[in-house]
Length: 333
Ligand SMILES: Cc1cc2nc3c(=O)[nH]c(=O)nc-3n(C[C@H](O)[C@H](O)[C@H](O)COP(=O)(O)OP(=O)(O)OC[C@H]3O[C@@H](n4cnc5c(N)ncnc54)[C@H](O)[C@@H]3O)c2cc1C
Ligand SMILES: NC(=O)c1ccc[n+]([C@@H]2O[C@H](COP(=O)([O-])OP(=O)(O)OC[C@H]3O[C@@H](n4cnc5c(N)ncnc54)[C@H](OP(=O)(O)O)[C@@H]3O)[C@@H](O)[C@H]2O)c1
Image (cartoon, rainbow, N blue to C red; front, side, top):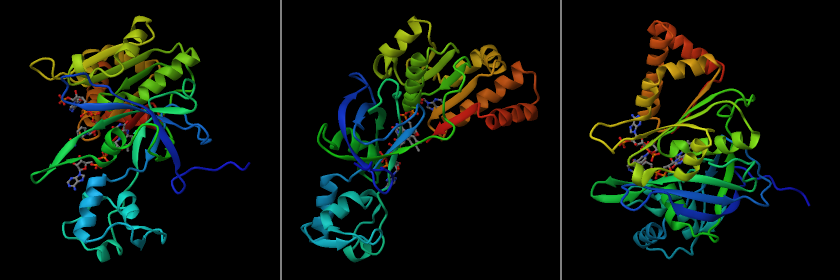
């Protein structure tokens, strides 16, 4: 039988086989562990890769728009982007980002040009050594306001709330990483900075390094709001710490008056960071791009200036060199 190649144009219909809330009762966040079954897809991945999923609009949003358009949904339409014929309901559910269209839009306008429903990316939180046919994901849900109306993130709401476990097809394809990978040499130390969902690829790295019997130091800096509610993969990480396989620094930002963030731990342990870099460590940053990644990079620069006794310009060059050597790696969004 000829093997089917799944990609952006021909995504694989995966099923969710497991989904549970990682936050405990009392938390102000809702972040889910979601496992997709890739068996029979022929898809293979490596630690550090992400997966893309095509989300769907909620049935309520589709129904509201159909009512506004005075249609039932069974009408056939031609998708202007693909040229394919499909039912209006299917078109609205899977092709148009309904959260991005203007009120009062006409069907004629939509059928000329519409905001497309683009794929969403999620870091894979498992290693193929442990889960060759499945991928674990860590998906944060959130709400935001448009005027007075509360809206939910489209892709995260679809994956965590709308899609039914073992039932809804989740159209997916792999989004391999070029450089956000483990060092080839398992003796090389790694420093992994990943607050929030940024911890996802590090669970894959740690599973992989355990499977490799890697001897290089593994150092994780994780943070979330509260230790009691938001410590993702607590038992796994504590177990690795107990086994002395992992050096763990935790920054629970809202457990005390003053905010504590991952970079505060980095700065406190500047000597250790500098020493690890001298030993060839790879330094990874994953998670929020808007503030966290910038602040962590800034902290790294401060550490290099202080402990490497370098001028700001030389410390910048040092980071540039780390980037060139693929030892300072970012996966931020
Ligand atoms: C390489 C990579 C890896 C990633 N890994 C992860 C991961 O491991 N876990 C994870 O949770 N996420 C991850 N992400 C982020 C993820 O891909 C999505 O961006 C995230 O889930 C939000 O998508 P959404 O569809 O839920 O939200 P969207 O519906 O796309 O909304 C996103 C934001 O857009 C704004 N917005 C949307 N519509 C409107 C509107 N009509 N008016 C005003 N503002 C609006 C809102 O501010 C909202 O906060 C990753 C991204 C990349 C690129
Ligand atoms: N639009 C939204 O409403 C929304 C909601 C959630 C996530 N997101 C986006 O989704 C991505 C990941 O979110 P996430 O749920 O994984 O977690 P996150 O929002 O990145 O938060 C994780 C932890 O990082 C802390 N943090 C905040 N600012 C920081 C900084 N400058 N440096 C270091 N740590 C910082 C947070 O503390 P505090 O929160 O206590 O400051 C929290 O303890 C981000 O891109 C984020 O912007 C958007």
